[in-house]
Image (tube, rainbow over the protein chains, first blue to last red):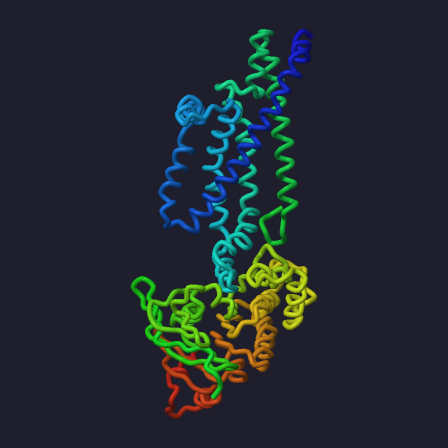
Length: 223
Length: 250
């Protein structure tokens, strides 16, 4: 009974963090897409260029370091070093986004490679330039192939976003912890937080599934 | 003598240790239909791909009309002037038949959407596929898909059409509809280079049959001569072609 009161009293405050959490996730997904897609394209079609080594190293580091380590390095190291003074939210979104871009680049690389090479040949034989063929023939197919794997980035980022607690971004976990130290009732409050996470996860996955159906084309994948 | 539209001189191409083309030369007049036959692995497909430089030849020269295209900078411009039909169709899998035909018109020739659609529709009717305009490649039979791919190339109004084994991937009962379209094209005066073992097609519409083996044109002649030779048992000019044709006839 008392627990219910504590939850009821603290919930609005915690739930307010939902917007920050969603903000982190959506920004990170967008940054990951904007950076990861070009990286994947370059790795496949300009694989012998002078970009390929730096990209491989980028992917290696961002996938190879724990997100918390990256977060601290960016927050205490890189950003101050560059003289950029950004609120913790932006540092968190940038780190989550860049990390996601490394994973996303490999999702897109794999999807592009799974498009039949004949598609490119046919496009080029019609006089399309390489970029024109990539834009109009390869990517519309590769993005459809990539969507199920890409959808994984949402629950990963949603759960990962809570590391931003460590630099004081006011997302859900941070707010829950503040409420816990005020009320000294960790279990009900963290449980309530968990419920919000799991519901957000469910809603997001439903949206992504419907996107898969929306872009479905006969002869492309299952469902 | 008509105009020479394509002039090919001494084309060589090596893949790793294997020299696939070892000096191929020929001329094509406007309206010619040339059929290339020969055992697999003798460079016929590579030859066609060298002509529009989907494969870069190692040496030799190619002229399209008056333009030397072997080292042309604007390769996309050259390819626009040559249509290519592939063994496996390679229709764009994410686009309907109609969109397959119109996409290059819009993206390459920069046509307005409405006029591109109109032209694409008329090209689809030319190959008898207008009723399937809204279908995706996965919903078409092999023969239908190949006819759409021919329409896709024709829409670009090419000077030469290259056919790389256009019926080899088709079930026997589907080759007829594709060959019909090709015959119609040939009789309409289209210049065509065809890699194919459909000898009935070669005998009925080709000006010349070229037999390739080991990366070179070994024997070449008028289809009528080759057919007569293949039917006879006395020594003739087309011994190797004859041996090959008897092998594929089984």
